Image 1 (tube, rainbow, N blue to C red):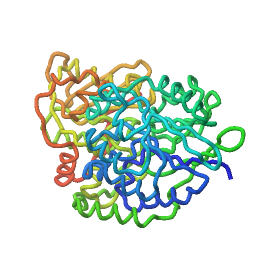
Image 2: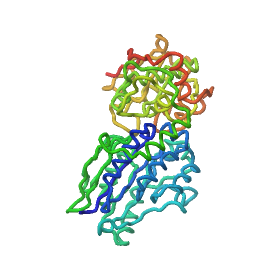
Image 3: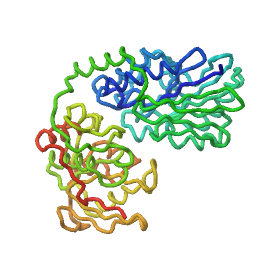
Length: 452
């Protein structure tokens, strides 16, 4: 045997399907052993339907069953407020590591967390350090009182301390997303186990192993620390054994929350893969944007692509309240803003992946209702913009229904500010649920967004 790590991350919506989270727990248990440690790299308490209902405590069903060794924070682990995060940390069996998340000049939850730690695994002394994306404070309003120091400096300092403490290998538990590459080039570490970005990854950068298991409990990564350098492989969850304890616990939580009411029916499945939701106009994006405009009477509805939670499993057949919440599982109110035509045009330009700090340059970040936009990707310009079939005039005023979140983040649509907001309506998923009850889920792709 040689020392192994079992790496999971971004479990997110897996809790909302009892069979899936049960199989995820069973797969982890099957991969575990005396020569292994289980470690998580963030967004394993939320977002999701049950996360909203329990303030992230549904994750304790999983944590208690599989007993991880270490965990670090993802941006969504703060979704329900810092007190809720502290409660989950206090009740979970793993040690939470955070070297770059601070509050009031000290490490976040200092009595409950550590910056770094060592653990012996199959005869090897391994050091671990955890870091979180510094953009979290701007991406998550619940984390705005936190500060995030430079993760490269934090890891470099921790790596030196870990080696001084006798660690023969240093492993970073990272929720930096694509920042893992820069971290690998800058720091002397053996492996960076990542999250935040949902595409799977097993790669090597500057001699350092980089892994990501993907999202929603579809896979875990097994890391072998033996040999001349660490190696890794994916372990698929779909055919894994089911942990009936976890499955039953989640079934009970869903039943208690009353989330099983059927509100609509999708004869044609609604694809919600990342490739679809960031690929331009899509049926799911149209459905949500239409719901926002319907609920408020605004001229235009806007749903940011990042707010549509991706899943490899489409929405199909009978759709419940839980299904609707799972599309936009955030306690964010729907709001109405007033924008000039010039500002609306700027907003459409800011939907280009070239203008957003996360993701790929060819992604599209805006799903619209009531508007038609022709975007020239080559020239990075809006060729045509119309509202209600009429060309937009720069000096006219238009109303826009969208999430309250977009007024506060600096990562998406910075043209939107609190000064534009004129009305606050219902919570996003409530508007979507009411719309589907009244109108069904027919939302064809009809040319409202054309990227060329």
